[in-house]
Length: 208
Image 1 (cartoon, rainbow, N blue to C red):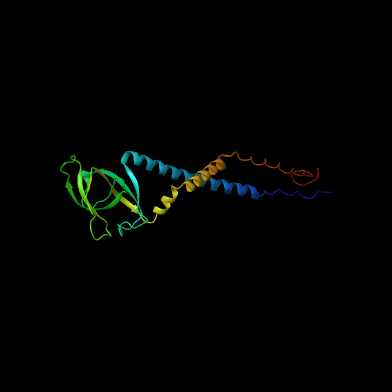
Image 2: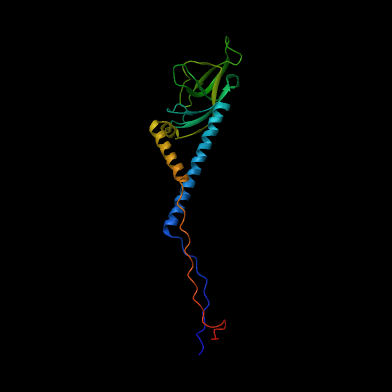
């Protein structure tokens, strides 16, 4: 009596990853992305810090609209320090005023300072939104000329420097670093494959 023919084993389809493993992968991906964004932000801060020291670059925040519409209220501008003898009429410059806040207006005239250094200049300025020039000229040896401005971000930059925001950013960054570098649990070992059932008869399915 012949035995029934044996069936060939079909290749098993890969099992989908269990839900906890998929969640772990997504969590790790989000954490790595957040860490990359934080690293990029840190790199930008380092570049700005180096530029501040080497190139005398500063961020100027505009709380009033005296330079509107060129630079509206709430804008932030990048300004670079230059000697006063390099100022040109039409430049938008920031002048430091002892005991007062700096002022950023457009230069309308330039003249040497009779009793000053060779680099010193006496400049008059006026805001683009103002009908008249500033009440008095400024004797300066160095100013910061505005390179470019971005409207609407001054409130964000101001808030970023407050103690509550700094504390929140510090806590969030610490939690992110700890979450990324915390030792992860090793995945469970793969289950052993089921034993193949013994065949009956020879390779041709016939009884010996």
